[in-house]
Image (cartoon, rainbow, N blue to C red):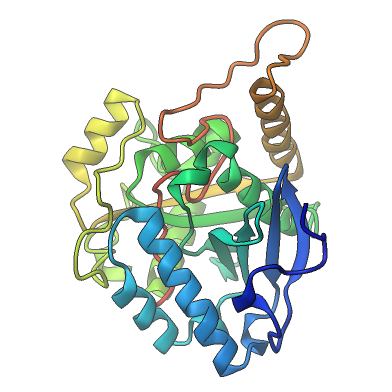
Length: 306
């Protein structure tokens, strides 16, 4: 088992700004940078190559142009927190990050691009990473809600957030009009992303959100297993479109997420809790419906201002 504080992967040695290393889940660790702007140019180059290669493996598509554009536009200076998921041998197998922002006067996190390579998806790494991020931010401000904003065209990502937090906390909701506060917050977020004119304020669909990609975003069209939801995404969301998702998270909601993760771990270990089986549906692509995730098996969230 790797040392809890030592990085085994050669490209992560001798960085100008070393990451914080912590356990993520059984056999996996997290390397987290809370000030990526402190990384020297040579170190940024190394991380750029790692992120580019992970994205190619995670999405079975060439995202090199996207990452080149992100880095050239100041990715490391803009993002608040960046993290790599390290496998049992110390090599990176996934990544994620977020921007700490205020939209419509509310504290918010914008989830940046994220993913996990196929061979490691069945271990709940995306859910563990999102839980780690949310715990750090929500518990820092326990008396007021935190809003999470993301763009995605993966129906399982949208469904996982709704199932994890409750449908009333995740927008858009197809059967209800958007609250005024959510409409304003989404509008501010879209303007910051450069998507203002492309946002439909009623549905939160963003047309041409993936305009920075030269080719396909996914090698295979993503699905959730929910026929009605998959049909909606296929009918309404074009190849370069996205859904802007806004979730409201409080300490009780976070507790629900963490309980969901604990139940998922017990189920995977073959030890369902007393009183019956946990009601956790697991999709074939590795996204657990009971736990919010920003990436899962193929969800991609395009980063801010690519």
